[in-house]
Amino acid sequence: MKIALIGYGKMGKAIEEIAIKNGHEIVLKITSQNIADFNVENLQQADVAIEFTNPHSAVDNLKKCFDANIPVVCGSTGWLHQWQEIEKYCTEKNGTFLFASNFSVGVNIFFELNKKLAALMNNRPEYNISIEEIHHTQKKDAPSGTAITLAEGILNNNHNKEKWVLGETENNTELSITSKRIDPAPGTHIINYNSSIDSIEIKHTAHNRIGFASGAVLAAKFLKGKKGIYEMKDVLSF
Image (cartoon, rainbow, N blue to C red; front, side, top):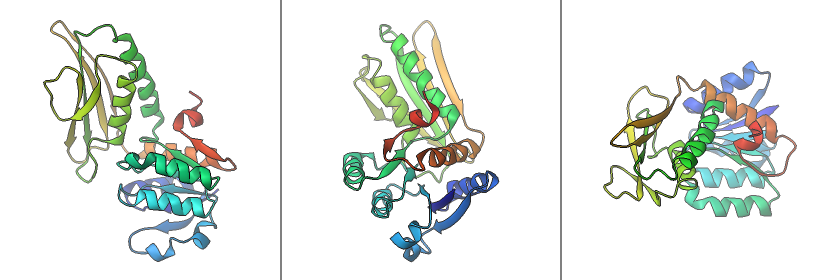
């Protein structure tokens, strides 16, 4: 499989290492230093693109991949207020797209555990729910995309909370997400159910970027030859 890497930071380098180790080829690497190479002609040398950049450039990057008729896996977060725009553009271009806030297999299992626990606790309003996430200091968005996905999983399965907020809150209907930036943490997410009697906690800790990178390559392999919009649940057959 020939891969175009859109973004060549820490995640891009980790993806490159995993991809090459699994017999794939990196045919294009785009950074802010060679943005002129990010064109349709070069993109079409690849079977699939993997996009890990930032909230400010992700949407334009995705559109360029759709214009080139190249399937694209996206791990950039912080741009989802433009989701409908991207969904519409992808459909109009008959494109192929997979977005995930986190590509780790372990985290995606954690997402499902989170939904199940939220549903089990739906009739237990005495437990206050909160989320804490810890990442390295170079992470630009807060809360993390993974924390937002976890929050949405809780809100969709537990009626004791109406919306999530960043930071502490005294409103019982608000789900607090606390974001901490501490080096060299690659990613920790904690869901806490706390009452005056006891506490229940589930936690996922990433030890390195290998899980994220492996999942992104797995998603890219899944997209090859497909059309439409997918998520990691499709890749992992949850």
